[in-house]
Length: 114
Image (cartoon, rainbow, N blue to C red; front, top):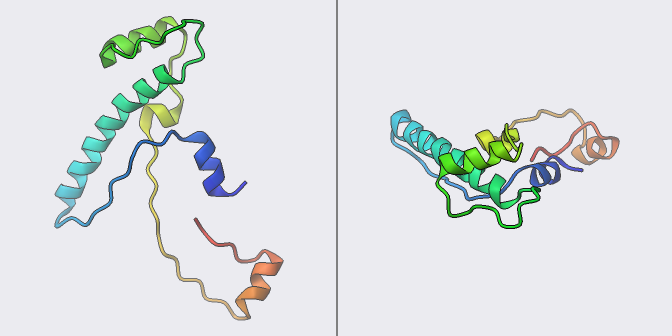
């Protein structure tokens, strides 16, 4: 498995935000809002994909009521990806090589980062 395939298997997918902000305060505000939203979405995700014997999961409940239901069903604590979400950051790295890149890739010395 590649890093991306493993992440895809582990993490639920909701949506994504991408942008450029004038200040750290603006960017931090978005991160805090997404963290709050992720907590709510993670609880709903756990209800939706539950393995409980209950025939119909309680989708119409509010978040505290859903948490009570998950507790009663023995489904707490939530897995880390549902409890905290996943933050992915793409970065650029400069790699200095002293021989042809194809040779390094063939021998496994250089891997493309996801």
